[in-house]
Length: 526
Image (cartoon, rainbow, N blue to C red; front, side, top):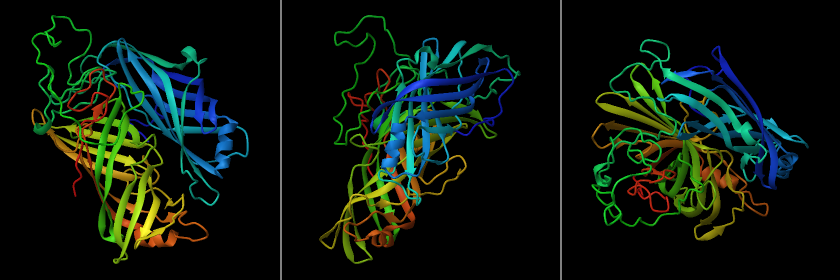
């Protein structure tokens, strides 16, 4: 599940560079560290002009997992398995560095009785642009695959998903280098590959360029810093000013002469930990909190403050009939004590209108969370539309009805993920929540509504599926919970905080704590 391509992936231009690399990896399986083989095929242009889009085509990723992986799935009584993969690709040009994530999906395949498990995923990947000359290299890095096993009767296993993380083996060596694309001088105006001229469109971003951030709203404005507000930030920057070795005299307090000392930050309010392990320059984190209706119970429940951690992809500049658009992709998930879920929370309602019922539940992520911001560069106001997609199941940990504990057992959850209307089902298949944010940004003014980096309100509507696995000792509680809770029309409103750019050398103090956690704590809104 990735960005929609400007051209079909199969359309490879003449003079393309074909890549077919079979690389040794080591994957962390439930049974331990095991060797695996990851084969990557793709096609790149042999060379590109400055500002010209470089789009990998015909991208497939095939992972051959060892027999131990089959044994792990058989132990879960899995008959089929569906895979979603994420390959981190390092992009380098001169001193510039960045990372892109190549995502892919696969149709369910049968779990073999023995032997290796071979999974092939395909998907569209972010394009690349650069405004400087020099060789652009792409290198395969860490690889992750999310497995969604299913039983013979079509239901999910327990747990409903397995996430495997893999790294290149020690013997991979230089073979991880996938391609090197020479980038020459800029194409003269009017020739193919020249970005159309428009007064409102910024130049294409070089590898390593961060996502564009509008100025902060007045109630959380940062201390003045050099740079142009609203422009894309370069590596190691917070506001568009390159960070690196600095020359010049220092003031007595350590501040460079001519600069104001940094403002003292107020302590962050209490919040669950949100520390990103091994952050990259593309790592972002934020908090999200809000309410969800349960239509059948005629009430709303607070979904608690939750940590989101994502890896941003490379920005795309896309020409559309109305304007130039900045596309900002990211992918990741919820994080709570090392798990992809919300913190446990209590939901209290009057079941069937008169029976007081309290349940302890979590929203458990069973696939990657994807974010896709789309800002149209229109003068004078830029308009933004963002979609956040995440597959989650509702798991019930404990319940109490009219003061009496109801033993729901260890496996009580919805049969399938919560489901929203998906405007692009062919690009984003499967059941998942869809939250939508809309915003506006006018240069030099506060942003309004929702922007991926500035946060704001996200809304959506969910269908809650039927429940399964509820009850112990032969007592089947599935019909009771399904009758009381499951159904359509459950409105959701979540508020996201501004993101913390975890991996940059000097993250903005007004957005990040000293240990790299989001400083801004959002408040729920009904």
